[in-house]
Amino acid sequence: MLVMAKNNNLVTIANAKIVSKYLVEHFDPECIVVFGSVSKYGKGNDLDLLIATKDDQKNTRELNADICKSLKPFFKKFAIDPFVVPKPLLREYFLKGSPFLRMVQREGRCLYMKESVKEWLKQAKEDLDTAEYLIKGGYYRGACYCGQQAIEKTIKGALIGKGWELEKTHSIERLLAIAQDYGIMINIPEDDIIFIDSIYRGRYPAEEGLLPTGEPTEADAKRVLQTAWDAAKQLIRE
Image (cartoon, rainbow, N blue to C red; front, top):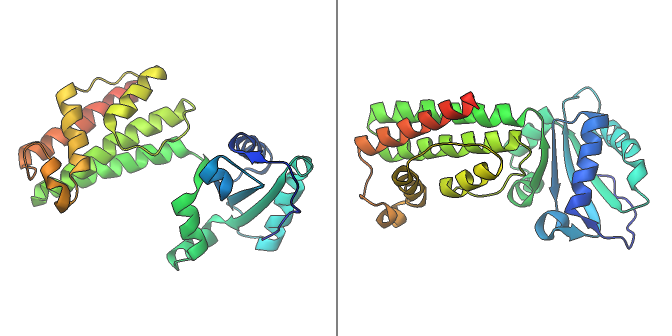
C-alpha cells in the first residue's frame, strides 16, 4: 500500500465523495469504499480508500501507480492512502479471511459501485425466489425474512438510482418515508408495513416475542411474499 505524506489539512466525507467522483470519471473502477477515520467520524487526517478494479492483467504495484497518477491534483489538499486491487483478487483475499478486508467490510462506507441499481434489484429477485422456495418447504420464518429483504433491497435500489446515499437501515417504514422525499411512491398498507418490520426485528429465537402472532405461519409468509411482489411491480412501473 502506498502511504502519502501526512499534512495538517483535515479530509472530510465530502472530500471523499469528490475524489470518488473523479476516479469514476477518469479510472472506471468497479467499486470504491472509504474506510478509517473518515468513514467512522466523517473526517480525519488522511483519506483511506479501497478501490476495486476490473483490470486483472496488471499487478498491484502497477495499479497503485496508475491510481496515484490520477490523484495528483488532490495531493496538495490532503493526504490519500489508496489500496487498489483487482476485483477477482479482492474476492480471493476475502474468502481466505483477510483481516484487513473484514475490517473494511465492517467499518467501510461504499462511495461507488458500478451498476449498483442492477445489483440491488438482482439480489431482491433472488430473495423473492428464495422466499417462494422456503414456503414450499415449510420454512415460514426464513421465507418471511427473505421477503422482507426483497422489499428492503428493491426500495434501496430505486433510491440509489435517484442519487440517494445508502443508509444502514432495515426499516421498511423508514425507507418508504425516504422514498417519498425522492418522488418514489410505493403503496404498501400500513398494517403490512408494521408486520413486515416486526418480522425483521423478530428474526432470532430470543426476539420471537417481538412478532405480533408468534412463530410465522404459511399465511404470514405468503402475505410477506405477496407484499414484496406488489412493491417490486410498482417500482418497475416507476
